[in-house]
Length: 572
Image 1 (cartoon, one colour):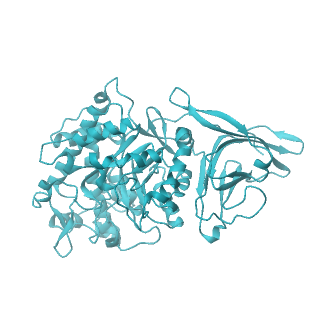
Image 2 (cartoon, one colour):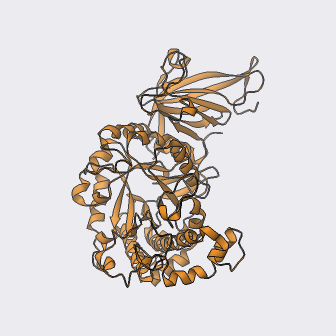
């Protein structure tokens, strides 16, 4: 079927639970106006995540938006280093910059707020025509309180850390710290109130609440307060979800998983309180990112960020933190099987897929195609600036060689990002990057409707040579179904061949037309197709061969049975 209009709006958690949001904000001493009223009649429509029966999309300025993102290094969140961020963001044609706003920046002294960095960032982003995702580094950043203000760090009695099972003080803050939660919540809500006032045009389209939460080396808080809660009954909602009798203790209900589930519940609940108060001020989409556990099997919980939104506790985050629109994976794994697993874990009907961080070395660029094929609303390599820091071996040694791998993809999709965002939300996109697993034999197969697309990597444009793989795994391709027998196809370093996935006896396929073209703004906030030429003869005899050029095809077929043409949209 053709691309349908977007279905009904996804209602933000704060709209579903606004009385709770207001109560939370009021408890922290904050004003809590209704977001719809707070925006005013003249404000731009709020960015939001819209869900359909087949997927989800980010909507910005009332239009579908595919986030072609890039995240700056952690310490680039000041005016001076920001000058070394924009050249990279501009060079790669990213439409969105992800960058931190630290608690210590905006509230260096308790109750005294300074938004000069935020205002500077907003102005610079508008000059560069970029959107922003703000990363709230507060109680937890990579599980530690490094970005908390000194008045928090120097008062561990008021702002307690976790205790280990041996009674030793752990580096991570306790999710049960009442004063910590109150202070973090107040600061975040004040930030969101400032955005409501300073950013009516919604330069900021999304906010990350905390960063890679949880704790390493200590599965949960073992303080007396935590132990009392752990020994008591687990939350009824959680027990019901997992089919456990009401009133059971954590240990009785969850056995060897109890410690981690306990930590995940209370960390997620903490984040939920922060997010709800922020959404009461300005209801932007919000998410939490995950430092990942192994994709295969179960590690000891002390070896990864226990309590963070790793894949096997996503259900707990859904229950404990409904204010979050999604949880998302930070991917620093070169193994394509692991990447595929993570995309599957986080791309759920109740959790729109977004990749807010991925390694920035060349081999990671091809995973954009896989994320697109899974319906991602956004993709963002980490460390994309020229401030001199590189997180090798997780990412590149330097950007000189890897920047183009991402840049050419973003340049290709930038003029047509809304088209792919809308198609992805309708479940009408399939895409894949080049595999290096020998078992794949340098091919990928994708099924879309009645059609099967075979992607071959490392083939000449002319002839029937078998796929041999590119010198580097730079290939990838994507298809969007525009109608029953019509497709939008693009890619790099890939041969795409279409066939019927399950032809009826005597049924064959006839290529009617393969237009190369491009998209331009239609003047109404959308994008329209512009014809350039028709591919024919050599250009189609051996499939659709995409080289390193930014080429987009609009392809239309007819299905033939005997001497008759099967009507468009008809079954076998």
